[in-house]
Amino acid sequence: MTLSSTSLSRLKGVHPDLVRVIKRAAQITKVDFAVVEGLRTLERQKELLKAGATKILRSRHITGHAVDVVPLVDGKARWDWPLYHKLAPFIWAAARAEDVPLEWGGDWKSFPDAPHWQLPRKKPYI
Image 1 (cartoon, rainbow, N blue to C red):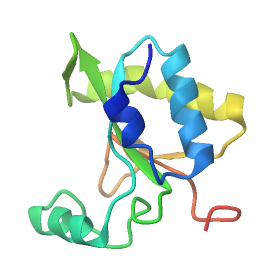
Image 2 (cartoon, helix red, strand yellow; image 1 turned 180 degrees about the vertical axis):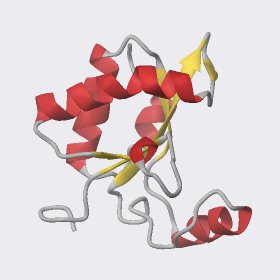
Image 3 (cartoon, helix red, strand yellow; image 1 turned 90 degrees about the vertical axis):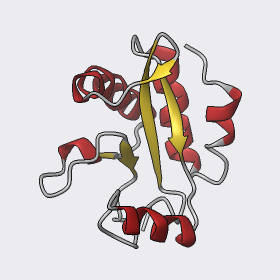
């Protein structure tokens, strides 16, 4: 698949290693997806916190170290967990191919976040 111009624009300001992973995932995936959000302002993060969509202000989005993606079915965004479990192996494969360490919000126990992918806080990404 090819990322849309909207998805590509949402990768502006995102760390180049994460951009490479998402672009590679788009090349190899069998599950269409779109980038929903990349770089985020603190004001946007505060809005999401107030809405209950996040539990933290110190998001990796604010520093350009995270992206949110959504699977597409017939060109429409779908938020069903099973679709994320079909998409995740392609993103993991892209991360391995690009030799980029990655964390998936879908693996989090306290507040699972299926759309969220981030570079780890440890070096070199702090």
